[in-house]
Length: 138
Image 1 (cartoon, rainbow, N blue to C red):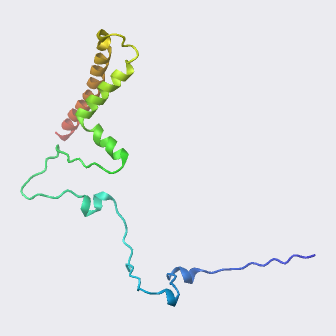
Image 2: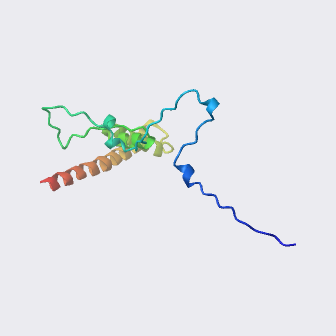
Image 3: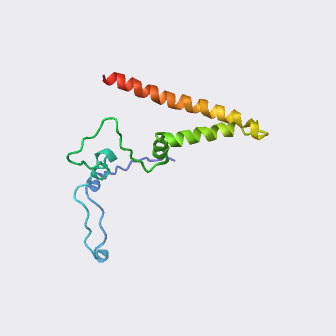
């Protein structure tokens, strides 16, 4: 028994240019669709996300306006840039690290020293970065 093979070629190129429409009895309202699709852009390019410019007021290069985004990663970066949050977070981190070693109230000096060291390192690095940026500008 022989098997015949044949290929069916389907050319849907003419159909991709036009939109499928409803049958005539179901057309109640005329569909209004934009003629040209708008391209999306990043928030920096959209007018809704840009900072309003106030005439007569100069913006300093050292003063940054902080925009908190909508994603969890944006919120994390916004909190990391706040010194009061980082000081509190590093202090709690030191307490969590030494919670098993604290048996009495007098053992509280261990997390205090660790919190001090963590804060000195964190804010020392930030200070060094600011000094380096300041020296580069000069």
